[in-house]
Length: 290
Ligand SMILES: [Co+2]
Image 1 (spheres, helix red, strand yellow):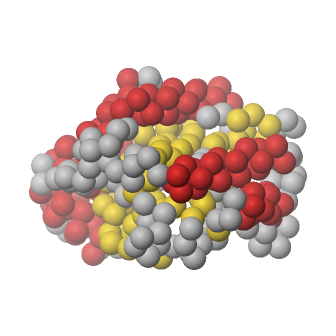
Image 2 (cartoon, helix red, strand yellow):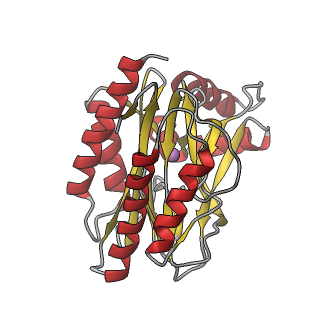
């Protein structure tokens, strides 16, 4: 573990988050917001650890604008961004209300407060379900539900979701949080508290680097291995590099079993979801990196 690089990734994420707050406004195209956030990460000396997620209302996660997207910012929007410095990660998220809704604001407050209470409870070797319990109790005290099938996660070099998961409820699993890097991410909702797989997100991760026959598939694969390694990436990034033929290459790689294609994660329509997230370095003492 390289503490210096972990802290640098966290510091960049913190600054980009402040920047994001100034550019996310109602009716601004998500494409413009995503590009600006990702450019800012690079400008500050990091790389995006995954495509910035800009998920609105009942979409909990995994919405990143495709290259031709026309969606505009609205409603209850979650901005989830990741930074890496040579594979050392920071993962952080916040929510904004773009329709002046009292309920959105309450939902945002519930996940934010749950994260703050989790942070206060955090110590070396605490069991993961104790953190989940604090998150659950805080969100329920706001009369909302935590999203129970999304969770925080351990992170390792070039591995966004590694090892231990940190639930958003008390799942009775007493896994101790040993020294390491963790993201805690409570989601609060006025819905059922369970998300399901939605449409394909255009966000992928390399699962098997085996050879592929198609020349464009191979070209894209070589680039993915070199540029993203085992971190998530999106079709928008590849269209920027190769033009729209990249989409054909991605299809070949998906069919050949090289990639996992993430679905959007959604609740039923009409339901709202908020999120807050920080990265924590757990040593003898705890450092919030983002
Ligand atoms: Co995360």
